[in-house]
Length: 484
Image (cartoon, rainbow, N blue to C red; front, top):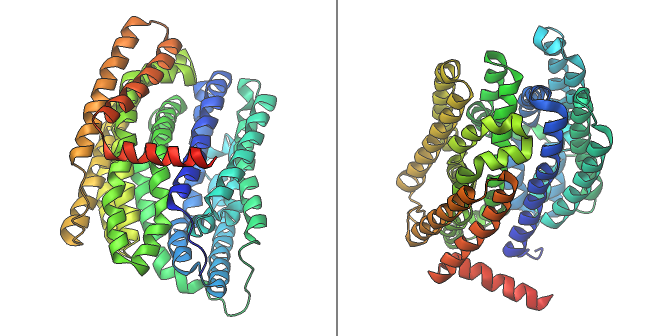
């Protein structure tokens, strides 16, 4: 049996990976927003949103399914070779079919045809989707490689953006750089995967996975309706500027959420492994995860609420200041969405109950679609933000009820001594940050001071109150520093 990797090290590497994902847009967003402007940036965002729907069909649920199945058999080399080959074959076939459908749509809808260059460039993402095998490396818990690869690709992308995106008309070049970055990641993945697996052409049956994949795909499809379809609706109902505001707000929310999902993503494969081998360890892991998630998301949510105008100004300039209210509305989803993902993937998927999560997603997406149709024409982009908050609350509530009441995972709780402590510390932090904003008029300086002082206040309060997660993390950091 292969030596099991340290879960703490997996989380640390995933934090580093997440840090790169946070740093990259922080470095590029201010520059790109000012050079391209909200309308051109919104056009790229709209094209990306459209293409992502086609990629969803090409992926067909393999990202989550692949992690779970690889985690189960990672100690058996022959089974791993076969599984890897079968999933890649499925991705390859579907990527080719979806690419053909994409071109048929592209040349038959005027809105797409009028901006043909950007949509043609984006098609490369669909074609090369077959190389997107991060699910394999997550399944074998190879987070060190994922982190290093991400750093290399993002550095190359950063250099290209500053070298080649010089004026508003270069939005097509910006789209090309984004696509090529994804393609390079895929190529590097395939080269490195040879260290762990080899192709199997005999005794492979990719179609045996289709029944299970159908559930994962439907869930991803339904979730995309309530997480991403609003950008498509804003593009058709309003304009690309509204799409840019929503995309920028969602980018910031996602940046904040990825800090917490770095913890849960690193535990998906371990949760699946424990469920297969040790029910006791599985339940113990489930009980611990919500505290780690909210330890991060509660202060970030409060911070975004207090500093939304500063953040939008820094990342987009004066033109994006009006999107500050949208970010404030959506900041609560920073807490809700990671908890929903935790319940779906670490609880339901790891337990083989993904169909239950699918039913929850169907209800949530129905609500989202109906409410967006009502509120976007009435209130515009703020309406879309309000709907997003409501559906995320609904998603958490339904999955929580199912996990505790239907599946009997009574270990899961979101309100306890630790979470109350996080709220108290975050509110004190928020009060201090608000005072700083009132005292310092400059949006950039007040943001920097607010983040530094606010973060310090939050963790000092937690240490004074002897909060257990904080003490555990500090203890781990001390031990790691001694080894270094």
